[in-house]
Length: 331
Image (cartoon, rainbow, N blue to C red; front, side, top):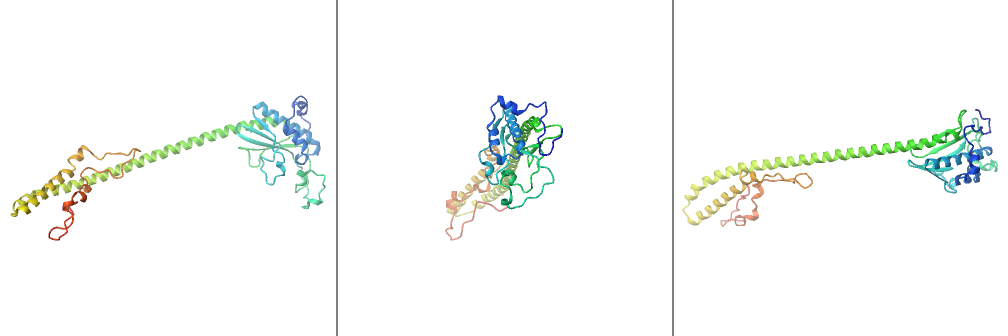
């Protein structure tokens, strides 16, 4: 099939004319708006009726597929920098999203550049043609420009060809909507799976980090117990050496004080010995969120000996000398 310059191609006999269907069916609002607004028809005058029939066929196909066909907002073409979704002749709402469809005539080659001065152009030209920077050469061929989710950046294009008219390609347009819906759903599924994978990986990393902190806290507690153990052995040896030294003290008051100090040391050794209570209550304590306490300590840690519990041993001796710090012993 061939189309002569400036004339519309003859519809295929296998394709029922939308104009004939329009006799029995009420035309969609987008069709009436298209016919009424000459400035935004984007086709030669002899193609207006055919273009309107294509818009009607698109609306009917949308209804048959369970989609919704809407008429674009009035006056949208006059808004500067309006989007492709707004600058359309009919809108189709699908599970994949909202698609805009514009019908236009394919311009022919060899057009001359127009004067930039608008007042030199014929006033009889419709706005869509007057606004062009190049003269419009009609070809009689229609093209559908489809914008929406997953469509190409400059829109999906469906043109008349020697073998097929755009009327015959309308099902192809709607098939693309359904295909895009599947692609969007698959991408969303992959996105959710990736988000779940990241969440699981983050949770695992968090658990590993908490376990590492817990193990490090246990190692610190063990080091403290080993240190306490060495100190306890030294304190016990020191206590054993104290016994004969205390017995040799002749002054009763001084010997009494020495014995009192000896008894406190004995109690401290029993309290801080890691081989005692620490074995029955090891520092294996995790926090409620699965991590470890900041510093799990075994009973008998170095800081158990608190100066606040040794009031009588603090301050200055009767001789004016500072009392020693008994909270730790030299190794």
